[in-house]
Image (cartoon, rainbow, N blue to C red; front, top):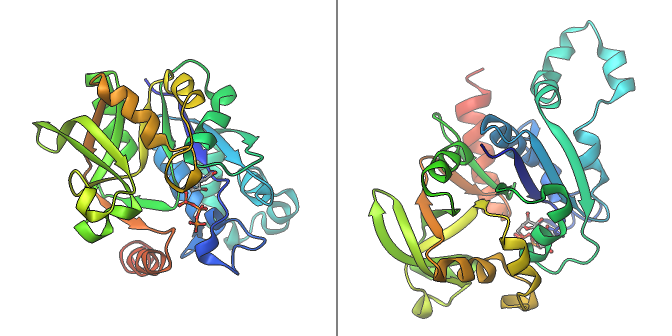
Amino acid sequence: MIKKCLFPVAGYGTRFLPATKSMPKEMLPIVNKPLVQYGVEEAIAAGMRTCAMVTGRGKRTITDHFDISYELEHQISGSGKEAALASIRDVLEKGVFASVRQREMKGLGHAILTGEPLIGNEPFGVLLSDDLCLNDGPGVLTQMAALYEQFQCSIVAIQEVPKEDTHKYGVIAGEAIAEGVYRVSDMVEKPAPADAPSNLAIIGRYILTPDIFDILRNTEPGANGEIQITDALQTQAEEGRVIAYQFAGRRFDCGSVPGFVEATNFVYDNYYLQK
Ligand code: UTP
């Protein structure tokens, strides 16, 4: 069973400036819940109750969110407003929260390596909360944890994207071994459409085996001068140790303004109004 999930939440969120000048992108709400809470709920539902946050300067409100707010809670105690805290109270009851700071933003691979002391020598989930995944059945990390039980190697979530969008993602090549399941042979970070090995793009959900830390330590900066998790995973893929999985559910790119607006409308129509 996978018990821990890493949340790299140190990025600058420049696409949302000026909103993200002093507020973390991960605290932007989709209707009335911050993005990062959706992610934490998905991880806890998958049994990953230890949430390891890789934060940075200016991100304190994230750690505050996963703690009690004594004055506020005292003030509304016993009133009808208390019900609005039910989801975060549930998360606090079930989850354990730890954090470490990434001092320099050297990329997602570097952020994951920064989280090593919180993870140790065990397989773990990674969830990028700006990819919001919604599904009426089991969440994406739950689906991936089940696959890990079968394959015991790193798993990446993938989705078909339009060919002209491959430069925004890590893209895989692989052999289909079951419906929606691929044994990865190659992966490229942010390829131009002409160089992309497929239109199967990695989105922000991973299960990683802990040998990834040693690989990351020896991974040189790649695309955009950042240490890329895709480059480290390529080393595992060459040994046949990466599975790509086309998950069930819908994913919204909330790191971009159009994706964020789309998610907001979707959650408002399909979840908020249905309550
Ligand atoms: P992004 O590149 O999408 O996030 O990184 P960003 O840099 O915050 O956004 P923009 O492009 O400036 O708008 C993907 C994820 O990896 C984390 C980010 O917080 C985000 O969740 N990340 C990225 C880190 O934690 N550290 C890094 O050095 C880079």
